[in-house]
Image 1 (cartoon, rainbow, N blue to C red):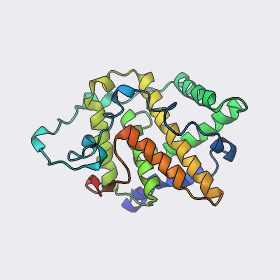
Image 2 (image 1 turned 90 degrees about the horizontal axis):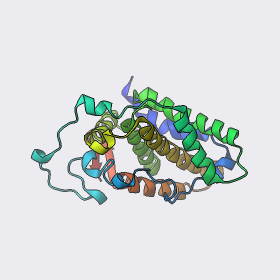
Image 3 (image 1 turned 60 degrees about the horizontal axis):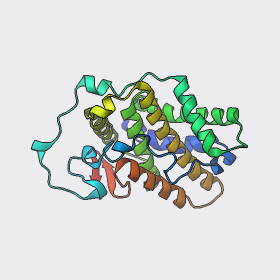
Image 4 (image 1 turned 60 degrees about the vertical axis):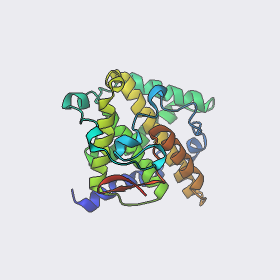
Length: 250
Protein backbone atom coordinates (compact mmCIF):
# COMPACT_ATOMS: atom_id res chain seq x y z
CA UNK A 1 0.00 0.00 0.00
CA UNK A 2 1.42 3.46 -0.87
CA UNK A 3 2.68 5.41 2.12
CA UNK A 4 0.42 8.38 1.42
CA UNK A 5 -2.58 6.04 1.55
CA UNK A 6 -1.54 4.55 4.86
CA UNK A 7 -1.11 8.00 6.39
CA UNK A 8 -4.76 8.80 5.79
CA UNK A 9 -6.30 5.58 7.02
CA UNK A 10 -6.53 6.51 10.69
CA UNK A 11 -8.16 9.96 10.36
CA UNK A 12 -10.61 8.37 7.90
CA UNK A 13 -12.53 6.90 10.80
CA UNK A 14 -13.55 10.35 12.04
CA UNK A 15 -15.22 11.10 8.73
CA UNK A 16 -16.74 7.65 8.47
CA UNK A 17 -18.48 8.00 11.81
CA UNK A 18 -19.77 11.42 10.76
CA UNK A 19 -21.73 9.70 8.01
CA UNK A 20 -24.39 8.68 10.51
CA UNK A 21 -23.36 5.44 12.17
CA UNK A 22 -24.83 6.92 15.33
CA UNK A 23 -27.87 9.15 15.19
CA UNK A 24 -27.82 12.68 16.70
CA UNK A 25 -30.21 11.40 19.37
CA UNK A 26 -27.80 8.68 20.37
CA UNK A 27 -24.95 11.18 20.32
CA UNK A 28 -26.72 13.38 22.81
CA UNK A 29 -27.37 10.38 25.06
CA UNK A 30 -23.69 9.74 25.68
CA UNK A 31 -22.20 7.40 28.17
CA UNK A 32 -20.82 9.42 31.11
CA UNK A 33 -17.77 11.25 29.80
CA UNK A 34 -16.06 11.76 33.13
CA UNK A 35 -14.67 8.25 32.74
CA UNK A 36 -15.93 7.09 36.11
CA UNK A 37 -18.72 4.67 35.21
CA UNK A 38 -17.07 3.39 32.06
CA UNK A 39 -13.41 3.64 32.91
CA UNK A 40 -10.92 0.99 31.92
CA UNK A 41 -12.19 -2.17 33.61
CA UNK A 42 -8.91 -3.33 35.15
CA UNK A 43 -8.13 -0.52 37.62
CA UNK A 44 -5.12 -2.20 39.21
CA UNK A 45 -3.04 -1.54 36.11
CA UNK A 46 -4.61 1.53 34.57
CA UNK A 47 -1.38 3.45 34.88
CA UNK A 48 0.86 0.68 33.65
CA UNK A 49 -1.32 -0.71 30.86
CA UNK A 50 0.38 1.27 28.12
CA UNK A 51 2.62 3.45 30.24
CA UNK A 52 4.71 6.27 28.86
CA UNK A 53 7.90 4.30 29.39
CA UNK A 54 6.71 1.61 27.01
CA UNK A 55 5.78 4.03 24.25
CA UNK A 56 9.23 5.56 24.32
CA UNK A 57 11.97 4.38 26.71
CA UNK A 58 12.81 7.96 27.70
CA UNK A 59 9.31 9.01 28.75
CA UNK A 60 7.79 9.27 32.20
CA UNK A 61 4.21 10.15 33.08
CA UNK A 62 3.38 13.76 32.26
CA UNK A 63 5.78 14.02 29.34
CA UNK A 64 8.96 14.47 31.40
CA UNK A 65 12.01 13.20 29.63
CA UNK A 66 14.51 11.07 31.45
CA UNK A 67 18.06 10.13 30.61
CA UNK A 68 18.06 7.03 28.48
CA UNK A 69 19.54 3.90 29.95
CA UNK A 70 19.58 1.25 27.22
CA UNK A 71 20.88 -1.39 29.59
CA UNK A 72 17.65 -1.22 31.58
CA UNK A 73 15.26 -1.43 28.67
CA UNK A 74 12.91 -4.38 29.03
CA UNK A 75 13.46 -7.43 26.91
CA UNK A 76 11.22 -7.80 23.86
CA UNK A 77 8.34 -10.18 24.50
CA UNK A 78 8.43 -13.62 22.95
CA UNK A 79 6.11 -14.65 20.15
CA UNK A 80 4.27 -16.82 22.61
CA UNK A 81 3.74 -13.87 24.95
CA UNK A 82 2.51 -11.68 22.09
CA UNK A 83 0.13 -14.44 21.05
CA UNK A 84 -1.63 -14.20 24.42
CA UNK A 85 -3.01 -10.80 23.37
CA UNK A 86 -5.15 -12.48 20.74
CA UNK A 87 -8.57 -13.67 21.78
CA UNK A 88 -11.49 -15.55 20.26
CA UNK A 89 -14.50 -13.20 20.42
CA UNK A 90 -17.85 -14.32 21.70
CA UNK A 91 -21.20 -12.75 20.94
CA UNK A 92 -22.18 -13.07 24.61
CA UNK A 93 -19.35 -10.73 25.63
CA UNK A 94 -20.46 -8.08 23.14
CA UNK A 95 -24.02 -8.41 24.36
CA UNK A 96 -22.82 -7.87 27.92
CA UNK A 97 -20.98 -4.70 26.96
CA UNK A 98 -24.01 -3.42 25.07
CA UNK A 99 -26.18 -4.15 28.09
CA UNK A 100 -23.92 -1.90 30.19
CA UNK A 101 -24.32 0.88 27.61
CA UNK A 102 -28.11 0.52 27.66
CA UNK A 103 -28.13 0.60 31.44
CA UNK A 104 -26.21 3.86 31.47
CA UNK A 105 -28.37 5.46 28.80
CA UNK A 106 -31.49 4.65 30.80
CA UNK A 107 -35.10 4.10 29.70
CA UNK A 108 -36.42 5.34 26.39
CA UNK A 109 -33.65 3.83 24.27
CA UNK A 110 -34.64 1.18 21.75
CA UNK A 111 -32.19 -1.73 22.36
CA UNK A 112 -32.44 -3.07 18.81
CA UNK A 113 -31.86 0.36 17.28
CA UNK A 114 -28.89 1.11 19.54
CA UNK A 115 -27.38 -2.31 18.83
CA UNK A 116 -27.65 -1.68 15.08
CA UNK A 117 -26.04 1.75 15.48
CA UNK A 118 -23.19 0.42 17.57
CA UNK A 119 -22.60 -2.48 15.20
CA UNK A 120 -22.40 -0.05 12.26
CA UNK A 121 -19.99 2.25 14.07
CA UNK A 122 -17.78 -0.69 15.07
CA UNK A 123 -17.76 -1.90 11.48
CA UNK A 124 -16.24 1.45 10.43
CA UNK A 125 -13.72 1.27 13.26
CA UNK A 126 -12.66 -2.23 12.27
CA UNK A 127 -12.53 -1.48 8.55
CA UNK A 128 -9.63 0.86 9.28
CA UNK A 129 -7.94 -1.76 11.44
CA UNK A 130 -8.20 -4.23 8.59
CA UNK A 131 -6.63 -1.81 6.12
CA UNK A 132 -3.77 -1.27 8.55
CA UNK A 133 -3.41 -5.05 8.88
CA UNK A 134 -4.12 -4.73 12.60
CA UNK A 135 -6.51 -7.10 14.32
CA UNK A 136 -9.81 -6.46 16.09
CA UNK A 137 -9.09 -9.71 17.95
CA UNK A 138 -5.89 -8.45 19.56
CA UNK A 139 -6.00 -6.41 22.76
CA UNK A 140 -2.74 -4.67 21.89
CA UNK A 141 -3.98 -3.55 18.49
CA UNK A 142 -7.26 -2.28 19.92
CA UNK A 143 -5.47 -0.35 22.65
CA UNK A 144 -2.92 1.15 20.26
CA UNK A 145 -5.59 2.18 17.77
CA UNK A 146 -7.68 3.81 20.52
CA UNK A 147 -4.68 5.93 21.48
CA UNK A 148 -3.97 6.86 17.87
CA UNK A 149 -7.58 7.95 17.35
CA UNK A 150 -7.35 10.28 20.33
CA UNK A 151 -4.02 11.63 19.09
CA UNK A 152 -5.27 12.53 15.61
CA UNK A 153 -8.58 13.87 16.94
CA UNK A 154 -7.01 16.15 19.53
CA UNK A 155 -4.36 17.46 17.16
CA UNK A 156 -6.78 17.70 14.21
CA UNK A 157 -4.28 16.20 11.80
CA UNK A 158 -4.90 14.33 8.56
CA UNK A 159 -1.61 12.50 8.21
CA UNK A 160 0.46 10.30 10.45
CA UNK A 161 3.76 8.57 9.83
CA UNK A 162 3.30 4.97 8.61
CA UNK A 163 6.51 3.95 10.36
CA UNK A 164 5.42 5.80 13.49
CA UNK A 165 2.18 3.82 13.52
CA UNK A 166 4.09 0.57 13.29
CA UNK A 167 6.42 1.57 16.12
CA UNK A 168 3.55 2.67 18.34
CA UNK A 169 1.73 -0.59 17.72
CA UNK A 170 4.88 -2.58 18.46
CA UNK A 171 5.53 -0.77 21.72
CA UNK A 172 1.96 -0.98 23.00
CA UNK A 173 1.70 -4.68 22.22
CA UNK A 174 5.11 -5.35 23.74
CA UNK A 175 4.21 -3.56 26.95
CA UNK A 176 1.01 -5.54 27.35
CA UNK A 177 2.60 -8.86 26.44
CA UNK A 178 5.34 -8.40 29.04
CA UNK A 179 2.78 -8.13 31.85
CA UNK A 180 1.92 -11.49 33.38
CA UNK A 181 -1.40 -10.15 34.69
CA UNK A 182 -2.40 -9.27 31.13
CA UNK A 183 -1.28 -12.60 29.72
CA UNK A 184 -3.41 -14.39 32.32
CA UNK A 185 -6.60 -12.61 31.31
CA UNK A 186 -9.26 -14.84 29.80
CA UNK A 187 -10.36 -14.32 26.21
CA UNK A 188 -13.66 -12.94 27.47
CA UNK A 189 -11.95 -10.38 29.70
CA UNK A 190 -9.60 -9.27 26.93
CA UNK A 191 -12.52 -8.90 24.54
CA UNK A 192 -14.48 -6.90 27.10
CA UNK A 193 -11.57 -4.51 27.66
CA UNK A 194 -11.00 -4.10 23.92
CA UNK A 195 -14.66 -3.41 23.19
CA UNK A 196 -14.98 -0.92 26.03
CA UNK A 197 -12.02 0.98 24.59
CA UNK A 198 -13.55 0.78 21.13
CA UNK A 199 -16.95 2.08 22.21
CA UNK A 200 -15.47 4.89 24.30
CA UNK A 201 -13.56 6.11 21.25
CA UNK A 202 -16.66 5.79 19.07
CA UNK A 203 -18.78 7.83 21.47
CA UNK A 204 -16.14 10.53 21.80
CA UNK A 205 -15.84 10.78 18.01
CA UNK A 206 -19.61 10.84 17.62
CA UNK A 207 -19.84 13.74 20.06
CA UNK A 208 -17.15 15.55 18.10
CA UNK A 209 -18.93 14.89 14.80
CA UNK A 210 -22.28 15.94 16.25
CA UNK A 211 -20.75 19.31 17.09
CA UNK A 212 -19.43 19.60 13.53
CA UNK A 213 -22.86 18.85 12.07
CA UNK A 214 -24.36 21.55 14.27
CA UNK A 215 -21.70 24.08 13.25
CA UNK A 216 -20.39 24.21 16.81
CA UNK A 217 -16.90 24.03 18.27
CA UNK A 218 -15.42 20.58 18.77
CA UNK A 219 -13.17 21.81 21.59
CA UNK A 220 -15.19 20.28 24.44
CA UNK A 221 -15.47 16.83 22.87
CA UNK A 222 -11.79 16.81 21.95
CA UNK A 223 -10.75 17.94 25.43
CA UNK A 224 -12.85 15.20 27.05
CA UNK A 225 -11.27 12.61 24.78
CA UNK A 226 -7.80 13.94 25.61
CA UNK A 227 -8.49 13.79 29.35
CA UNK A 228 -9.83 10.25 29.13
CA UNK A 229 -6.85 9.10 27.09
CA UNK A 230 -4.41 10.58 29.58
CA UNK A 231 -6.15 8.78 32.43
CA UNK A 232 -6.01 5.45 30.59
CA UNK A 233 -2.62 5.53 28.89
CA UNK A 234 -0.66 7.91 31.10
CA UNK A 235 0.33 9.99 28.06
CA UNK A 236 -1.06 13.43 27.20
CA UNK A 237 -1.67 13.59 23.45
CA UNK A 238 -1.00 17.33 23.62
CA UNK A 239 2.55 16.74 24.80
CA UNK A 240 3.75 14.18 22.24
CA UNK A 241 4.27 13.83 18.50
CA UNK A 242 3.94 10.63 16.51
CA UNK A 243 6.99 10.73 14.26
CA UNK A 244 8.77 8.23 12.06
CA UNK A 245 10.78 7.35 15.16
CA UNK A 246 7.71 6.69 17.26
CA UNK A 247 6.10 8.77 19.98
CA UNK A 248 8.30 11.69 20.97
CA UNK A 249 8.07 14.65 23.34
CA UNK A 250 6.99 17.93 21.77
